[in-house]
Amino acid sequence: MGRYFGRKLAIYALTFVVAVTINWLIPRFMPGDPVRAMVARAGLQDPAGVAAMREYYTSLFGFDLPWWQQYLNFWGELLRGNFGVSLWAYPKSVGSIILAAVPYTLGLLLPAILLSWWAGNKFGAYAARKKVLDNAVLPIWYVLTATPYMWLAILLAWAFGKVAGLFPVGRSFSASLEPSFSWLFISDLISHWFLPFLSLFLVAFGGWAIGMRNLIIYELEADYAHYLGALGAPQRLVRRYAFRNAVLPQVTGLALQLGVIIGGAVVTEIVFDYRGLGYLVLEAIKTSDLFLLQGIFLFIVIGVLVANFIIDVVYVLVDPRTRVGMGSGS
Image (cartoon, rainbow, N blue to C red):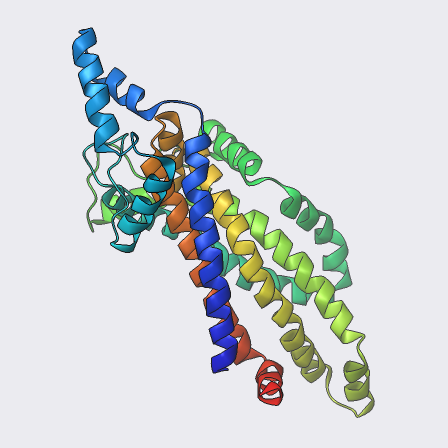
């Protein structure tokens, strides 16, 4: 197991280096001049003052250096935990801006990922042995799993926010409130959170339900299931073994879906103007804030890699066959 996880860590380290390099390159190929945008926001009219400010900011952020030197400086600052200063919210640091938005994004992602995975697997396993329910609900599942996050978010915002007026649309809490542990603020926060969460949950739920339903049907037709039935084992026991075997690919699928649902959270936050990382991405793109974009993408990359590694560990603990394979390979 030590060698297995050592190889995994080496792969993740290489992936991290490649992802960080791409993360550094992409914002610099985007159109727009971030220094010019900062100078324009200052509202200076004097040409000499504008030129002096442009020169100051260009030198301050290192844009006058060769690209290779900027890249090495980026890695040096990254290893020290410094993500730079935001061009959009200057002089705030990128790290402080991201840390302020992360709780809202995690508050969407963690419940949506965990609840959709748990509920989808349970519901799919139940429907696999209830033909009436399977025939009635299966088309809805296919529609849900094929629905883009952005489209469903717009539909929910229009139906429950604009038409019905049941939930607010925009921001993560009302502008008139200050963050606190009071019931007024918590209830307001939940009311703003519900629709973005629901859009992520429904799309992911459909995919997990369909996957588990198909896997359970396959497992119930496997040789070991028929053998247990011939031995007189109760159907409850057979279904329990079928579920344990069927859930293993779903654990692997959870790792693959992390990146997809994080991307869905970004566009969902943009639709609802939810003040998480998605909102910051939009603002960083509009203002050509290279450092903020780098910081957000870096946080997402690290989050996906860490979550995938945790799922690798969980998979080894859940499936004893992987541990047997490791032992035989040594």
